[in-house]
Structure formats: structure tokens, C-alpha cells
Image 1 (cartoon, protein in one colour):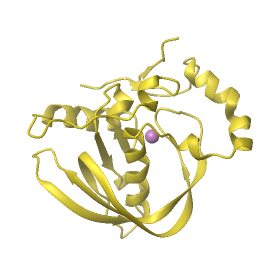
Image 2 (cartoon, protein in one colour):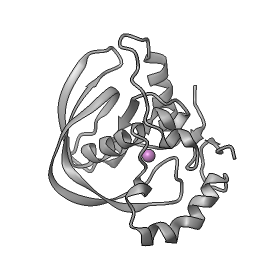
Image 3 (tube, protein in one colour):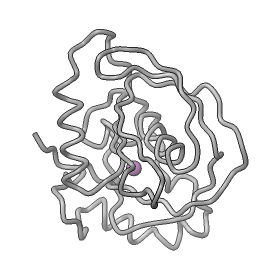
Image 4 (cartoon, rainbow, N blue to C red):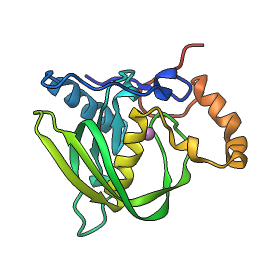
Length: 182
Ligand code: NI
């Protein structure tokens, strides 16, 4: 099932999501999240973006890989960031919930994360570069944080009108969206 993607302005995107009870059957939800992400040509999608305030996100960053690099395709359930390391670097981020806006965000190069996969196997892994970037962005979603929260007050002011339009559903997106209720 492909879900509509919740747009900026919906309170679910600002809420800290809750853990999924361990052992719960989440395979269908994980598959739906991948399907929804692919339908929108995204490289990451967090459950709040389909209106579910639970700690789950999916990542497939293959489209961002250059020759010789290997992408990751994974579901992260009840993840916990254990450590961030390396130098902060800037990268222009976008978000399926904030179509049409991109901005540079600084994040540490390396992330160490503990999470469960869709079979409830626990993993502790370290990711760097683009993989870390996508994971950090998606992890923020389950904490109720959006990349626009990191922008300077000046940049925020510049984007105010655009963001207001998105929250009213005035977007140019080639995927199904859910407009926030007033
Ligand atoms: Ni996002």
C-alpha cells in the first residue's frame, strides 16, 4: 500500500515518536514504507511522514551513490543513536514532506546506531558519509525535528512564504500528499 506523504505543518511531524512494542509484526508496514518511498523517488522515509508516530524509518540510498560506491537498503526500528563522530560537513538536504525546498545542513560525518531490523534482530552499526547523512535526517523525523529547524533565522524568514504554502497544500509534487488540517 502506498500512503500519501504528510506535508510540513502537520503536528505529527513535530512530535517525538514512540517505540514499537518488541516482537510486533511490522513487515507489512515496512514494505508499505519502502513502496511509498520509492513511489515518491525518496531515499529515506520515516513513519511520521505517513502519519504514524512510531520509531521506524527506512533508507535506500542507492540512487545517491556514485560509481564504485555501494548503497544501503535497511529498515531501522526503535533506533538509538549511540555516537556521532567526525567533522561536521554541509550537504544540501531535501525532504518529501517539504517539497521544493532544499538547504545546506551541517551534520557530523559518522553515526553509530543501535536498531532492530524488521525481523527484530538487533544491530549496532557505524555509517559514514551519505549513509550517515540520510540516517541522521530520518532519525530526526522520529524525534520531531525537520531539516528546516536547523536553518538560520534569516534563511527561515526567506522561506516563510514557501513553507506556509506547503502547509496549505500548495505544492508541486509528483506523489500523493496529505495536506495538514487547520
Ligand atoms: Ni525528511
